[in-house]
Image (cartoon, rainbow, N blue to C red):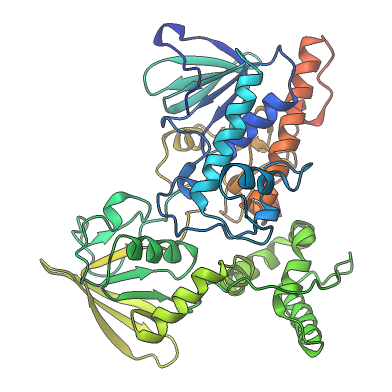
Length: 486
């Protein structure tokens, strides 16, 4: 995407709002800021890549990577639900239907086009800095943003739109520090780029990341056996056409993980007696999942994470029917083999890896020999373990703190980051995956678009108050002491 870029001579340039991260989340925040703003507001988006709006999810080159949500639910604008569908019909396929699962690269083009359109409408208000933020300092009532290149920028507010981080590294007994056959990050070219078409692969983790790697392997002509191992052996469920199930949520919902499980099972049984499907029950909870999550005491949230999270994930985050059909066919022929258990030993030789795992049901030790092992356990949520310069700096200087469940960062309800002393920032904000501990449902477009719209409105209201000389009375500008969430 061609956008205005800052020159090296402009170090110290001042902006109203700075966005760190140029994937879908950062692009949609910038789009909403420009869309809602007046001509006096300036926005800078700092992203070391040239493309904006794509990120890892939508920057894929694999056309078989499909959206996990129907086109009718993928608008970037909460006030215009069919916006993406109209755009897709005009720019991708005139025959696109509301229930289609379109290619993810197409959605990246959509996000790119939205931002491009707003930039053209607001000339001079937006700049894209191709650089990396390494730290943020407070300078009076503003933020000084320090870049890898040595430049500094100033902004009244900073939004961290960092998206997902690669999976945390796996430490198997016997795995060498420098491994030739293990890939820690499945989103890099090294993961599958040099595999011979007849070799074999072991994917550790059986969620959406593994599904993506399977599709990428097959697209590049890989014909070998793909092994998938996880502790429970659960693959994502498949979308299908369903009839809606009436809402059964109210404030009297059980406040325990076990009670919620029992209630949902009861509803599923009722749906099946009427010829329905469990999917309609899960989908009926979608508007209320954040409220349900917030109602649970912290020990119950922890119990859910320990015992129920894998089952929720595979039923809630489903895959397109076309992908489900392909996985089922390859499983039937043995081209994909799923294993349930925990890896107990790892031994490399020049050609591959000998893996020993303990099968979950029988307790027996079994062995696999593969040419490549790829970590597909999903994005890392414990930010203490993430290799990210800015995040590490903010944590080290106690400007932010992890949430108590180690799913992201501790935040005020409006998205303001909370420091180690429990004080909500009046400068630093975030959205998306970093809010998982407080909202649980926060990683899909239907949730992120609402957060982006609300945060844009909040920040612009603050800018208007400052420029008008009004006192900062909004809760977003009040430095309040916040106890840990939960």
